[in-house]
Image (cartoon, rainbow, N blue to C red; front, side):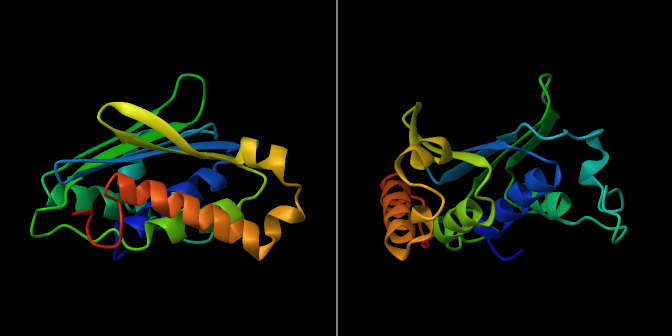
Length: 182
């Protein structure tokens, strides 16, 4: 995967395969450190072997590279990576990476990746938060958007563009953009 947006989309796709109905994403920047937490209410991980590329729940092939590639990308920048099974069910994955490190990947189009998640899995309640100065701000809630727009209306180009522009503005305010966040 070429950038952090690709990794994020891959991890949320794993949540969908785990039958999640709710996904929470928290993104932030602090002194060139990018951090991300993704939690879901899916079936959860069976054990810590998910970081092994040759251990996968897939039936179509015997290799799962998404999580191991993310872990390696984080470790290449001297960052931290954690994945845990939640007691109430589901999984929580967190990582931090130093964007000033020579091996750091670019963000990619984080806003587009988030919008693609929202529209790829419309039945899932996705919540997106940004965190800055130890304050967490909700910038998107699938549950709240569905109170405003019905399933047909949310597909309109104008609504999709509004969601994109709103997310893009909030991500830029915390330094998450196409330019490494600097």
